[in-house]
Amino acid sequence: MKNSKNLKEVILLFLWMGITTFGGSAAHVAVFHDQVVKRRKWVDEQRFLDLLAATQLIPGPNSTEMTIHLGFLHAGLPGLILGGVSFILPSMLMVMAFAWIYTIYGSAPQIEWILYAVKPVVIAIILKALWSLSRKAIKDTGTGLVTVSVITLSVLGINNILLLVGSGFVLSAVKFLIDQKDCKNPILSFLPFSLPASFAAVVRQFNLSTLFFTFLKIGSMLYGSGYVLLAFLHSEFVQGLGWLTNQQIIDAVAVGQVTPGPISNASTFLGFILGGVPGALLATLGLFLPSFIIVLVTVPFIPRMRESRWFSAFLDGVNAGSLGLMVVVTWQLARAALVDVPAAVLVFSSLLLVIFTHINTTWIIMGAVLIGLTRFFLGI
Image: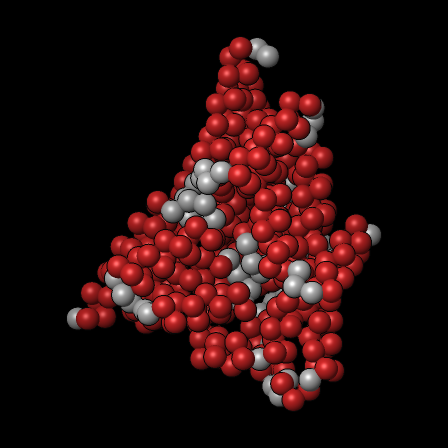
């Protein structure tokens, strides 16, 4: 009876949060803390911090993994599954609605003007995220060198997955050489990465199975902020398969910003554009499925993972590499968005707002929508 009550609480809380929480992973975590620590007292402060650290140590969207962890602790395996689904589902449905409108009216003049105004704002938001992430990812000279190296190699066309895994191994190898006694079980620490990490994207003709496995690969390797997803989307779908354009990637991020729930639901938007409702469902499943599996597998190992200096070094390398990939992709997306002087002005003014004010980014994007509509109706 208690388990049934707990499961109901998990579903209702995360369903509501999936409808109402905007602002990305950091904002989501703040709301989780208020709801499950202070108000409902499902876990204490220390346990919450342990879970937060665990989401940083494993691949996948951080805020979604927090819901999966918390659902498991409060209601067992059913809570793990239904907690995560409840958080993802509302945003997925909203994004699908946006994608449907986009596919029908995306070429209409008013939609073009809206996207013209929104894209520079999204670039500004990504730049702010880059700055925040850099302060955490670049911890010392070693991580700084990794970031610069990844930027250089990515520009030269080296595969993103190889760059990320290589970044982790380089720093962990250095840590291993410096202090071998703290690396007693490196293989055990590496278990979360045993999920499929390299499905070859060799076909350019669209099919649903390739779509699913490509997003599954991304979900297995995605670290940190949802904005890191940009690097993978660009590498796999723009450069690799050639199914999408830079414009569509920016549009997907914009939709992820104006809808609640995880920003990673941009995958739903792109899946719908490519394959309709089946494409949206498979893209979403592919991206988020690894998070459910990895959380379930790693729960017993969380204390050991946190104490492993080898694994921590591997994570530092991956985070630094992710930052480098984001820098390269942001530059490429900015070139697609900044088509004239007014667009550049929008980027600069939006950057000032996200840096010096506490305005929710959703409102800034809505302001850009109004600017776009005003320019359309006034014909300027």
